[in-house]
Each structure stands twice: as structure tokens, then as C-alpha cells.
Amino acid sequence: MSDNPAKAGGLNRQLGLIGLAATGICSMLGASIYVVPFMIQRNVPGIGAHVLPAFLFAAFPAIMAAFAYAILASAMPRAGGSYIYASRSLSPYLGFVASFSQWFGLSIAIGVISYIIVPFLRDIALALDADTLAIWLDTGWIRVSMALLLLWAFVGVNLSGLKSYERTLIPMMVLMFVLGAIVIVAGFSHNHEDFVAGVLAKEGRQISSLPAEPLSLGVFLAAAALLFSSFIGFDSIAQAGGEAKNPSRSLPLAIGMAILTVGGFYMLFTIAVYHAVPWNFIAEEAQNKDITAAGLLSYLLPAGWGVAILIGAALALINDLPAMLLAVSRLIFAWAEDGIFPKKLAVVHPVRRSPHRAILLSGLMATVGILGSHFAGDFFLGIDIMVTSMLVNFLLMCVSVWYLPVKNPELASGISVVRNRKLQVAIAFTGTILLSGFLAIHTWKDLNAPVEAWYFHSTPIWVIVMGIASFIFAREYSKLKKSGTDVEAVFRQLPPE
Image (cartoon, rainbow, N blue to C red; front, side, top):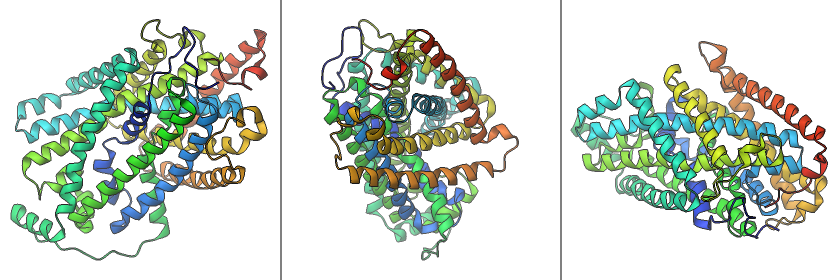
């Protein structure tokens, strides 16, 4: 059922294990690793020396969600994975509205990422003493134009087909890790004494290391909820389920590879920087300005190495674009294939075998993200919407593991990962509890954020998006039933290949 090549006119199973893993890794490993573990000292005051334990705790619900995805992917390897899993395990309504908010949040995030790549390019120009180029890149219309150029270049890569996609993504991923390794090696090669001496030599400032301070549970959980966002992205692998070779094996394996690789890199990266830089210095600097790994290590490294770190950060961001575009476009394709979105969006290019119309629509929504970031002057709203959407989505995946054998025992019989039912229930229960807690913390923080207007809170915007999704579903589902389609049969089985 799941390992056959695609039918004529449909998607082709051309994406190998490395390409799948790269899709998840590049969707997860954005430039946030160069910023979030350090700026968290401003966003969650009091976390101090306890960033790594919070990171480790944040990984636990992500691992539960990854297990849920792996279990469901082994039984339902199709394009638009998370939509297929929830629609077949819970209900078509829950599957659509949750994946619609996921599509919206991720598409806007693609635009946001495209927009914030340009300042990284500007900082590289400044580090290379190319001041005229840096000023040019900081000009409003140039920044928007560059962001659009980057976005649509990778829309073109996705339109060109999977071979072009893999040839682009995998080498960039390897280079990203090589450049990121500079931070890890530099961090472990220096200690706090070296850093104190470096700051004294460069700025004449005297600093000292302080012992870790007591930590409150509330601060710890708030930090973990923020750091959890760093693990979002492995679900991109599941969305490519309709194009994976040997999917029942490769999809779960690629999800595991992505979580372990990125989780390991995050931990090594964060430990390395805090090994070289006293946490109290990071906390003090974060209160006064935006800080990055490159800026912190500039006290220890020659200027050339700092440029290499900046290039690594920019590349980590750029890598997000092709992988996330693949993921969101496959959600549209899956909705259209089921008949709850215009059928024309399920068309596959006759030569390149890419769902070109779904890719173009996702590119247009990402363009809205770029323009919105520019005219609103704030891109964090888009990120917060994405986090809310993904927490809800991960939560539904855990619930789907719970209910699939009850709602759809025929599909449940195809599970080839974690077959023990008691273990499945334990994973689903643990993931549901932890993800519900993280969602509650994230929502509380958003609703209590001091912003100028209600529409700068991500939660009401997400609710509005869910309302739009509900309207679309009600209209299209009604049309499907009126057309004489046996909707029960459609959502009881997998889409044909």
C-alpha cells in the first residue's frame, strides 16, 4: 500500500532518507539557535545559569510529539501528513482547521524568515567593512525586495521538483553544520577566565563569574515554553509523506534523525557558548541590546571567524525556506485531493512532478508575511502565531495516536513503529499533558503581553484564522456531500497514490 511508486499524474516517491531528514533538520535549525539561548535572559529574567536544563525539559514534549508523528507516519504515509493523521484518526473538521492554522502560521513564518535574513546579510557586510552595501541593505524597499527575491528563488527550487530540491538543500545543510561547528569548537576551547581577559583587553571592563542563583518553577517553565519553539519543524518530514521512498520505514527514521541531530546540536552549541561566556555577562548584555553567539564570541575570536559565524546564522535561516515551502504546499495538496479545497490545487506538474499550484499559493501567503512584517514594523507576531498553531497541531497528533485504533482500526493495523498499545497510550498521554501545559503558558504570556492593540496578540488572530478555516470547511464539506460523494468512505481511508 505505502511503498508503491506514485500513479501517473500524481506525486512521485523520489525523496530519500537523507533528503527527508534534511527537510526536518533545515525546518528546525534556523538562526534562533544563534539568538534565543542568549536573548532568553531578557525574555525570561531570572533563568540565569539554568538555560540548558530548560532546553532539556523543552525537548521532552517535542520528543513525545515526534514519537506520535512517527507512529502515525508509519501507518499513513501520504502528502500533508498532519492533516491526514488527524482527519483519519479524529474527524475531517479537526484535521482541516488545525492544519489550516498550521499552514497559515508556517506560511507567514516563511515570510518573516525571508524578511529577517536581510539584516543578517547587512551585518556580514558591516563585518567585512562594506559599509555602503550595509546601508543599501538597510534601506526599506531594498530589504523588502531582497526578501521577496530570496523567497521566490526557493519557490522556484520547489517548483523545479524533488531532485533540484535535494541538490539545493543537502549541501547547504552540510555547510550550515560546518559553520556552526566553529561556535562549538571555540566555546569549548575557551573558558570564563579567557573571556574576562578578552573583555578587559577590548573594552577595559572588569567582569566576573557568579554562581548559579536559585530558580523558581514559574521562571523555569516559562523558559522551557519559549525554548520549545526551537524544536518546531520536524513535522515537515511528515508533510512530504507522499513523496518518500519506502515511507513506512524512512518517515519515522527521518523524524528520529532530525530530532536527535538538531537536539544534539542545540545542546552542544548552548553548552559551548555558556562554557566560554559567563551567564551573568550574557544576562546583563541582553537587558541593554540584542545579542548573538557571533557578538559574544567576538571577544575571543579574530574578526574573520566572527564573519564565518554570521554566515552560518544567515545560512541557517535561508535553509528554512525550501524545506518549509515543501511542507506547507503539501498540506494544500492534501486538502484539495480530499475535496475540501479547490480540486485544481491538487494538480501536479506533468514533467517536474511538483504540486505547482499549491506551491505558488503558499509563496503568495509568505509574501503577505514579508509585507506584513515590513509595514507593521514587528515580525514577532508571525512567530507567535506559528508557535500557537504548532502547539495545537502537536497536541492533536498525540490525541490521534490515542484514538486511531478506536476510530479507524484498519489504518491502525498498519502502524509499524511502537506497536505496543500500552506504550502508544503512554506516549500519547504524556505528550498531551505536557503540550497542553506549554500551550496554556504560551497563551497566558501572549494575552498578558503589553501591546498597543488587541490585534498584536497572536491568540485572537489565531482564533480568527480558525474561524475562517471553519467557514471554508463547512462550505466545501457541504459541497462534497451534495455532489453524492460518500464522505464517510473518503475520510475512512487514505488518499490514492
